[in-house]
Image (cartoon, rainbow, N blue to C red; front, top):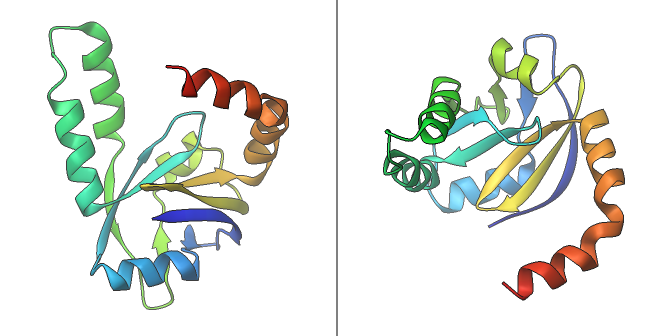
Length: 145
């Protein structure tokens, strides 16, 4: 559903533009609100309401008697917030999430199938550089599982 890499800037009010192609998908699917939360690898995850409910069920069903499940759920859900695009297609990112993802000005917004990720440009560049030679290795490993 969401694909590609897009460069955007966070404005002085903490808003970032959602790529036009992603907004088209939102309109086609009647998506009005999203959930933004702490992602993995120091990025932010953005889910449509429908996908958020599916993810929420998955994590809610984890046994709360396990320390790892409790910790993960606390970190994921306590940092989640509901957002809507303004008329210009921007969303407001709370300061605590900007801080977590080290977002300052330049961002990279990527589509990862069922979610959108927001990265600080420097973090995304570093991540890609670290993993660029692992593509075939990862494909082979994951295909054999």
